[in-house]
Amino acid sequence: MAVIDDGRAYGHRRGSFDAELAEVDAGTPAGEMLRRYWHPVARSTDATSLPRDIRVLGEDLVLYRSLTGTPGLMLPRCCHRGTSLFYGKVEDDGIRCPYHGWLFAADGVCLDQPCEPDRGRNRESYRQPWYPVVEYHGLIFAYLGPGEKQPVFPRYDIFEGLDTDTEEIVIIDHFAFGGPSDAPCNWFQTHENAMDPYHVFILHNAISGPQFDPKLEIWPSIDWQRNDLGVTATQDRDLPDGMTLHRVTEVRHPTVRVIPTPTLTVLGKTNNMSWALPIDATTTRVYAMVRKPKDRPPQGLPVYANDKSWFDLTDEEHQIYPGDYEAQVGQGPITLHSEERLSSTDRGVSMVRRQFKEQVQRVADGLDPIGVHFDEAQALQSVVAGNYIVGPDTDIESVPLSETLRSA
Ligand code: FES
Ligand SMILES: [Fe+2]
Figure 1 (cartoon, protein in one colour):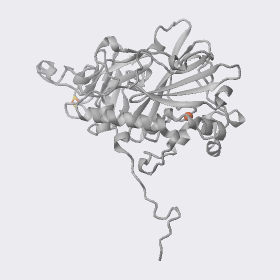
Figure 2 (cartoon, protein in one colour):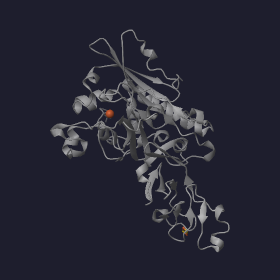
Figure 3 (cartoon, helix red, strand yellow):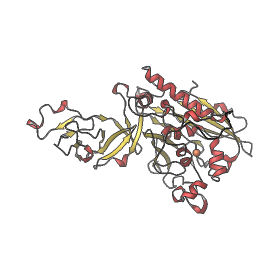
Figure 4 (cartoon, protein in one colour):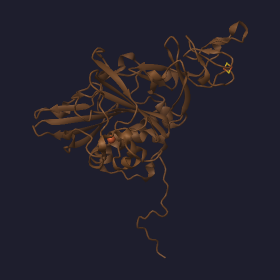
């Protein structure tokens, strides 16, 4: 009997994911590459005198803040006999294990062993496994990689020179259009979405109703560019007054997205940056840092039918008004790359994936990946993403100019 192949689902194979994009654990090629960067692991307010369990890149850790204000991040399992520092007592100089009282500083050095002769004659040779942290505008960043490869902590021009009388920086930890802080899906499928501008016209406008400024409903010309920090998407729209709206979105390797505001309330460089935090291979949190005037509310969530935000929608309404959360979680815990059918409008997604995998290979080859610097003079990075209104005589190629983005 002839086999009928008419595309029906019978015998459909399950498919597989691309481990070089999806894995995050130590010892995996992608996990080792990710460990060469600083990642936001918690809000500053999460670090208190009550230790907190956190999970980062598949590692269970304990976060605390000493009574003199120093945050510490370490493995929970005490290096003495293994009880959890989650139950530790935070003191001026660090955290004291509840079992036999060994006291550890933020760099893991043992400062006290109360049961040992002379409170531990050799105590400084014991070390609790620890990770370095940096606080930046309300987030705690950690570096989970090898000490000899620790890069300088990057800062960004859009968050510099804050006038603390009139401005503030707020941290948001849910998807831009709403969703719980921890999404049950692989981080990369949330990340590559930033280089998928076409979904805006379908998911965010046609399906869910307008969620963007009306000017952004004008169909643009879209292009992508690869540079030595990541990939940018540029969109140019001809406005009715003869001007052009030049909109630039950035993905910065490995986990950063810099998105222009959807409401055009901010022209020029954007006011926000977000990081995907791979909690583990199937759990993702997105931290957004937003600079805003103190007297204005942060950009609100889109309003759906019946004046509801994402958090107020019923299950049925989530089906009717899907957003980024539904689309990205809907791809599954880890999307099945082998079953995809990438098309012409996925070029930006392909560029991000290719560049990412090249960095995985560079690290496997003993080289440094892009975007890491070891000289403090290179710590300050310039952002390009934003909404730019330019006149008919402006050379769009020259807007915006940035010394940090060079074609590669
Ligand atoms: S198990 Fe931590 S001090 Fe003994
Ligand atoms: Fe989106």
